[in-house]
Length: 127
Image (cartoon, rainbow, N blue to C red):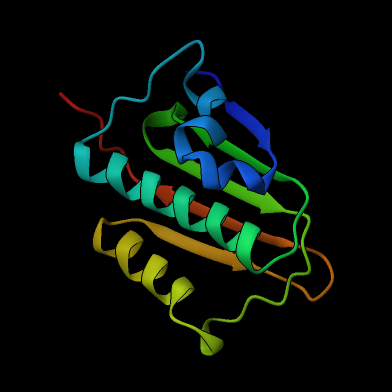
């Protein structure tokens, strides 16, 4: 399956996640077990909400890759950065959810340079 990418403005968050990430499913479908799909939806929703509410971002880039059996989700915004799990529970909640599903998450958020979330799930395709 080819890499899926969409760039969206955070104000789409308030119109619903489907509008904001509609381009992710064009030309193909991700077919993973439902808990993984729900987890990806949750991470994407939370990242877009954070970009709109906290990051002062003007653009969010989101990529979903279902090649090589696993699923990779990368979300980057051009906001103010400085996201710190010690200052709130949002990132901790994302980490807990992803790890409970057998995945990994990393957060890179240097001050003044935006935030990048990178999530990987092992092969969990539906049979």
